[in-house]
Length: 347
Image 1 (cartoon, one colour):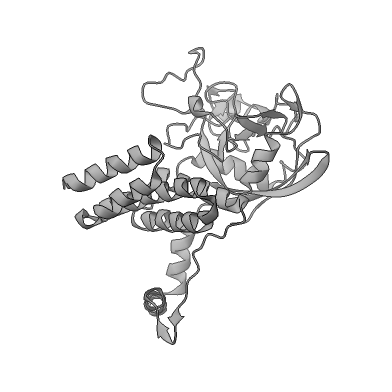
Image 2 (tube, one colour):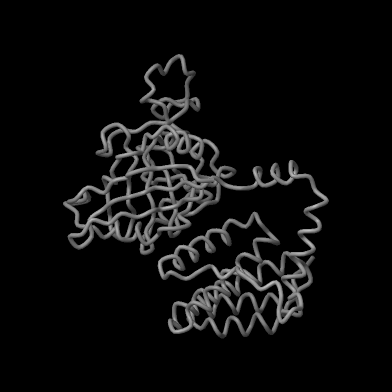
């Protein structure tokens, strides 16, 4: 179905207002004016996502009312994803906003009142309807549904030195198992086996990334896949020809559409198909888009270009990622060790 011209203009204007004119209120006004032109749920989802983009930017500008702007933006992202759950860009932006809200100690604002002066609110009615529907569905089917759709969530307790003081904090990361199944499986296995406990973030580059996960030497020269995926030191061969487990590598999954945006968790490597246990995370001011795969980009060895697989995003604790990216370094090595004290799967 063609997009109504009025709605398309509103979408284009909203992008221009936010990205070029830095006028998020103008973007919201354009989207509100075209709301009645929406004809499909897909169009509604995109309009909500654009409204969320504008609300996020408005919160950056209007610090006095930041909490309200960001909570509305988060709800719009959430509502957009409830219509189109497979939109990775929207999910990434929502995760980024959640991290920003966490840094500011702003709740996500998804709470609601079921009753107002004794009468059910619209959301209260919805909850009652959903509760009634839940009674008609077996617990087994519900549990299977959620098990099939939830992404794994990993918690890392990190410790670093900031302004002479030792800081301990938690970083939570959502892993995108459908987009990068081998990377996620390997990472989860290392976490469950305790391989990352005590491991350092050995390489820190402000404005770029923080890197760790070398489970062999902690210095950046080691680290291997937790399972054999058919690749040995970047070469495809049967496992019988790769007897040393430390040579196990994960093949590239960088064409999955996930980008190096704020909070991205990605695989470090020494060339295509040599991914192991090492990973890096992008801070809020990090610029790593040159590591994204794009159609036509040559990522083969010796090409001079590099593509890395993104397989997760920080959902909480982005402030610790940002702080670690600013620790004092000798070159790219932290002067005071930055360590992972513990790592566990929490979902």
